[in-house]
Length: 339
Image 1 (cartoon, rainbow, N blue to C red):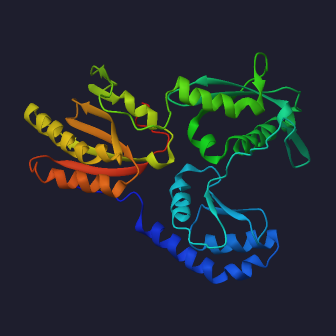
Image 2 (spheres, rainbow, N blue to C red):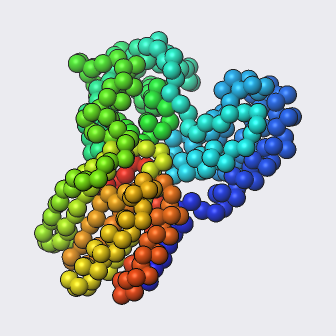
Image 3 (spheres, helix red, strand yellow):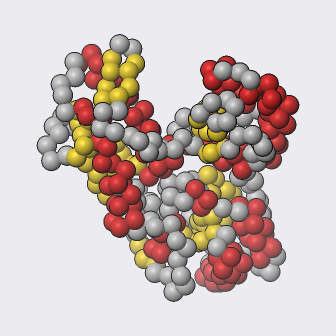
């Protein structure tokens, strides 16, 4: 059986187009409102078509720009990208995701529920995690016990402003609060530290790797709790982790009952990749052979999912004996790759 799951649902595309049609019908009237009324009405229109996405205004309603956000909820990120990609406003430039505050300062503060928290009250330290950057935070001043949880939640809001919505959601792994701030840096140093570690320590420079890629293999023997697995990871693909346009994962799961079928599967995978990788549409990042279940999975990350799925189906026509299921999911942190 050959099955494809469309990862950018047609209803999202249509919903975004319908939103922009409705927006254009009200744009002149919107521009005459004050800032608060503009945002409220803009979100009323947006919520009719795109749940999970919010609209924010940078500047004034006459000459500002629009920011579309998912409030850091990754499952709604594709909708943010779709509605921004289809933007057709002649008056307002549009941006996907909340951006970093370029003027973020150590005295930046936010207040909520009669409690104020400044960046000066937070120290940080970064560590290399499982392909992402793990973050430790500590308060530099004593926080009343009744406000600790509230202060921690406010710290996440501050990180959203400091790093931007995409980087905080995608590039930061574990966030841990610790009791002591010894040997830690001021919070406003986080962007430069994250950017350096992302490129230099983790190797995610965003550049599509040149041919002659490097691979690593891992093997697990079968036991009571573990299937027999043989995994091959394209180490060169790590350069692309974190790119917003390489966030979709197309997975091909192939039944492997015998050695001859495995050889056919490998030949087909080569043909599939030859249609995709030279055009930099996607890259085969990970393959896992589960000998216990007789199944092989190949995970290809890229941006043009329709092209990746179409190439898989077309090349499969030359391998009629293979039983392959094709699916796709939005995976901007490359969770499969980082197993």
